[in-house]
Length: 330
Image 1 (cartoon, rainbow, N blue to C red):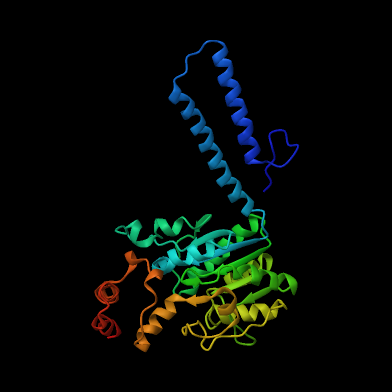
Image 2: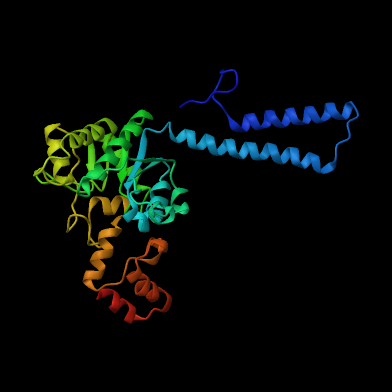
């Protein structure tokens, strides 16, 4: 999207418009003085405050619109069960500076649903540029709602004119969000179609975190939607690898983690080094299984803690008493 000034002769500049409005205001005040109007002293401040408010709002809109002119956008597919991690996840990915679209699974299935329990927190929502919500679906399996979100979200990103897309699921935190630009440069330099956090030819292509050409990503998820309700077709990771082979895509090889899905947060991998990838949902469960410390407190949205976690790890954070961790470990 391109903005131009009032007569279309050059690009829009909010600072230049602000200066023009101040000149106009001063000229208007001068004319009123000349015709003898009485103006209260505090009225001058109100006028200038109003112009400043308009200017600040236009600067914010200008920065937002300029994101649409970048070739890369971000999509964050997620659902209510990721809400506990979503504030931290979005804060990190949003700080990378790209248009961020939240693709949220429709959580409205019961009359007694409360918005605050099934939607992201306000703090989380302050770190997005746009949100879409897919229609309600009833097909069994975690892959079905995720596929609908990806298919619809990528269509929106395509419509907005982006050439590349970075995907980061809502239970992922990037400790090096500036690394998104590094991944982008890798894909452009090699004229690759996609780079994913996990790639094992013949087995899987990771769907948690990846960066790809928009047309490529949309085609892969369209193929997935066509066959979504077929049985014995493998999980999403296996499907994506199959589609990448069928489409003859150029996939950048990566160092894979010790375990797929990144349960071990101490691993060395391409995405760990470049963007500081951590899969908080899997890591949280794995730490409990290992009888280890929980994920750092700063990554939790405590509103979404389960009752058992409130009685154990939250009390551990408050007191430091190991007995609460032992109770959490079970």
